[in-house]
Length: 145
Image 1: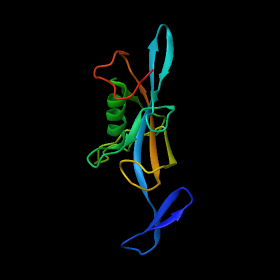
Image 2: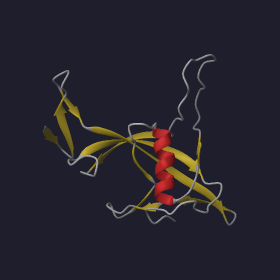
Image 3: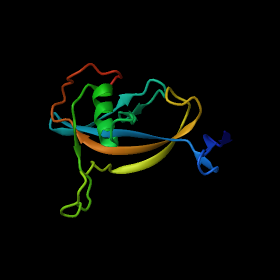
């Protein structure tokens, strides 16, 4: 393992070269129509101490879009729907199901966390979502407003 700035490099076991440690993450900008105006909801991040969009690590058995929906519900208590970004549809007859596309994908250097005990890079898939009903359906794990 080699430290590089705020991230970490490891030797790839197959190719023998240094590669960055990267984890897929996903989150969503959550909008809701309240009191005649559109509002953006943010969570208070417990470790980073600031307001952020709800999101987190993608689990092994889910897509980035599924992770974004799960993280929003866990962190805010809201059920949301994703808004598709502009883009071309798949060709007619394409044999594989399409997965919801994020609006943006960014790389964010992150500190050690409960997924990896060294600094690493989050490949963050950012979606836009709407909460048609602004009332939580579950108890939020983070303060959300």
